[in-house]
Image 1 (cartoon, rainbow, N blue to C red):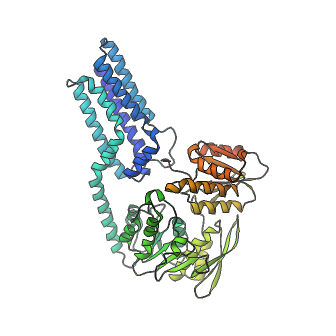
Image 2: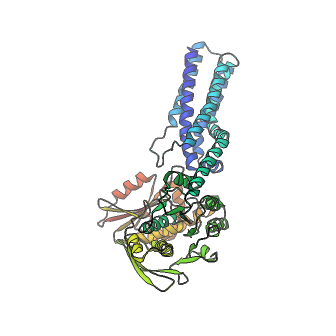
Image 3: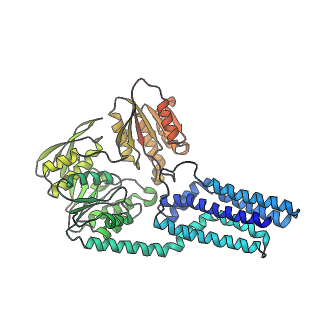
Length: 527
């Protein structure tokens, strides 16, 4: 009977370590496989280790029961059966209670990590069996609990063991992408970077260039070195004339790394601001990293948003500037903005002036559109083709995307909020005459400035929205402070536990006017 209970415990242990891997690897993946980032996350989310602490407590119980309690055999079996049940409970407790916003993607890397992780756990299980079979039987159950408690370390260990393999895989993919790029000598590559506005600029520019050329752009958020490599290997064809390459960075030097892969001829820097300040550490590092694109072009031209204070202080020689400023080479002027769209004009360096109309919401989009017009004109796209490309534009998914849900208008700006984007989204909300509701968890990855910038966001929201729904009690604190400092009425504030609770509150609000809801940011599962 004791053997059967122990075998059941081993089976439950293996089940438990698998569910632990699925939970921990999911967050590790969201943290971009950064050990330091993941350790910080664990420090901020200590509740994630509750099951591991629970396992250590049971380890102590097994030692006490096996070494100091000498009951009858049947009693021992009952205790060990309870230990087996505890392992099963820990396994089930690791199964997510709700669907993840971004589920774990079983990439080849994750599969390799799982195999190595399981090998480590199986070795622990084998050690437990050997102890049970005669070495020190009292430690057999304890080993299972300790091994489960150490699953976060096993994950890091598997990642460390696999590091040479992952490096070799990356080198192979990178060399293959370089080979493909070398086989396209006539391909013209345009790099786009910035703290925000990259994806919008990429979409706008591609729409315009497609009126004349065959264009490939990096899909979705493929703006990392491996994302760009995947784009080249999976999508680049011989007939492509232009490759519009979005370049993202979370650490110092990453834009230079991307330039060394694709060697962009022309480049656009859309903005520089305190985005990812937690990993960049200083604004100086952000400026240096983003401006590296303008300094590492292969014979082409840098296009810079002169309206941005950090960019205007670092304009490179020979660069073409754009923006709303009088100093801009390509100067835009907002003519009319409404909830239906935007009209604007652009004055070219030679004095020509053209008017454009777009269904995109917000004056802030005019900046990026002006940049797209500037580079398109520079690359020989005709005036009518530029006008057609702009007219065809649709909102980028989750970036001020307008949706009608019954009697509610939703402005979906849920993707990766930042201080400038949040202010622009509130401006768009102000264009509507309906009952204005803000739903937000605030902004993240802003380092030491996070509380201050979220407080400022709360103050800005107080001037525009008529009801504020803040998502998450912890995250709501600086937003609440900002609202209250502006004297915002308490009965117009609701702190929701999650986005579902927030939307239920939206639907329950009573008003004679149609509701318009701004969804500003939607934090990933690791927040």
